[in-house]
Image (cartoon, rainbow, N blue to C red; front, side, top):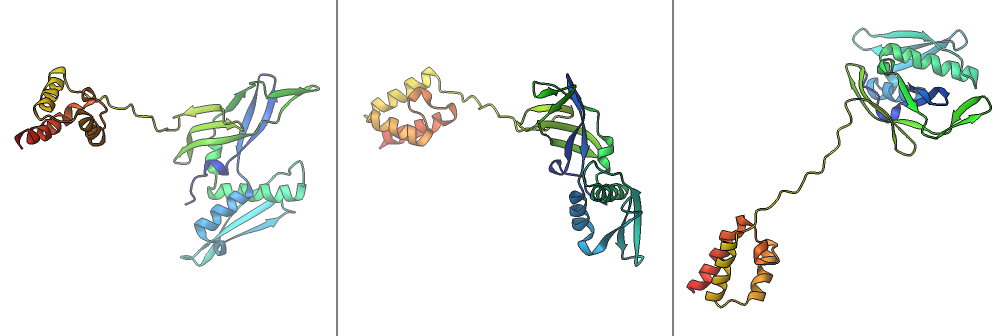
Amino acid sequence: MFRDLKPDEIDVRVQSIKENGAVLLLYKDARCDMIILDETVGAMNWKREHTRENKNCIVSLWDSDKAQWISKEDTGAESMTEKEKGLASDSFKRACFNWGIGRELYTSPFIWVKNTGDFKQRGNKWTTYTKFNVSHIEIIDKKIVSLTITDDKGKVRFNTGNKPKTKSKSKPKKVKKISEDEILEIEKLLSDTKSDKDKFLKWLKSKFNASKIEDLAQVDYAKVVSALSKKKGE
């Protein structure tokens, strides 16, 4: 019913950190849930209610066929700051998980990033000011099959599954040039027609992008010979 999360809708947070690396977790925020509810069922077709001093949240969707509200409920946990607000937000996000919004995050692989010099020790603890983000994610049937995490400098710090497809630079095709015999044939025609060679080379450049006779592509040889032969017959 609800679409998959986009890379920029997924938050990446450090769960634990030590000298040689850190464990990262994937999150969504309440704003993301509200946006997806609005765009999927419409702002007037869903509602949220909190009970037990915000510990529980009930998210209800309007079922026009049954002409009634269908509800799902879950319990949240307090955050370290703004406990009441954090509790209401967490219970809302969990209730939205029940509806399937962001459920793919539960299938996240174990994300371990190595310390590349950006983790610092503060007393007995390790910390980092590096911000991590999801630069690529592929989800099939609500399961994460491919994931790339980059840091705030754009460096890939974690990658699993199929790497994101990038347009490969196609190698320019090698153009086959005319042979020595064909070069001699053109020069003979120029002599027979008493053509101005400088004017001919300018024409060759503008018409076939060849600065010299030997630069002429094999596919254009017949056209040049035909043009010179017509002049010879005049």
